[in-house]
Structures are given as structure tokens and as C-alpha cells.
Image (tube, rainbow, N blue to C red; front, side, top):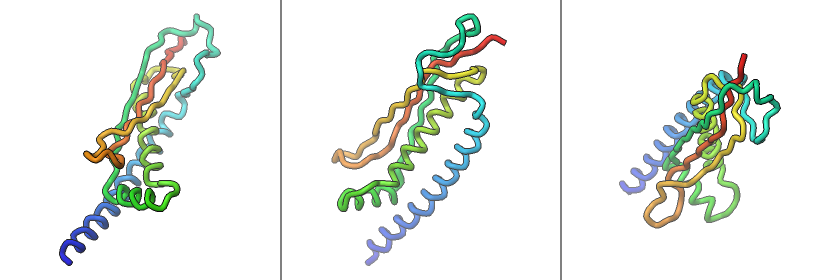
Length: 149
């Protein structure tokens, strides 16, 4: 009986702390994205700027590693048994991608535009039995163009 109480307490604690942390991170992302709204990022390789307007071109990147909490891991395990969309991992990937893009933008404060942007994700920190996700890494990279004034 004591083991069940400890298990349920850990699940409840993981749910409440994980939810609080995730909501706080989403609010932070929204605030920081609003600050960087005027710095466009595009996936196209060619830009509409003549070469004489481009002052410099620099490779910029940003990466983020987001860990899955105990409650989400439990929910994902149940969803794997019954099938369907694993929403807990979707929000994990969304947070990692958005954070990586913001960190890339923050690495290029004076850039007018970032072109040829790519995002890659990877699952890292798997458990010993090779099942489940421990952490998700997202890396965003592109070419930051500084324009002449």
C-alpha cells in the first residue's frame, strides 16, 4: 500500500510541477517571440536583396534540449499501448523548436533577416532499454544577413 501511495504522489507531483514549468516556458516563449517579431527568418536560399545591400553573412545557430517529465512519460507509455496521438510529446517538440529558433535569433542581434533556416530534432538520453524518450534536442541554423543602411 505504501508503494502505491509513493507512486501516486510522484505522479501527482510530476503532473503539477511539470504543468507549471511548461506553462511558464510557453509564456516566456511568447514574450521573447513578440520581441523578435521584426527579425524575419525564411527557409529560402535566395534573397531579394541585391548583393551591394548585404554587409555581412554569418552562420548562426541555436539549440535547446527539453526533458520530458515523469507524468508525460507515463502518459506516453499508456498512449503507446492503446495507440493515438501523443500530445505530451507534441508540446515537448513544440517547445524545443521554438526555443531553438529564438536562441538562433538571439545569436544574430544586428541581422536584418536570417535566410536558409533549417531545424533538426533528435531524441537523446534514452533509457537503457532503448524505449521511450529521455530528452528532445532541437537545433536551428541559418545565415544571418546584416544589411547596409
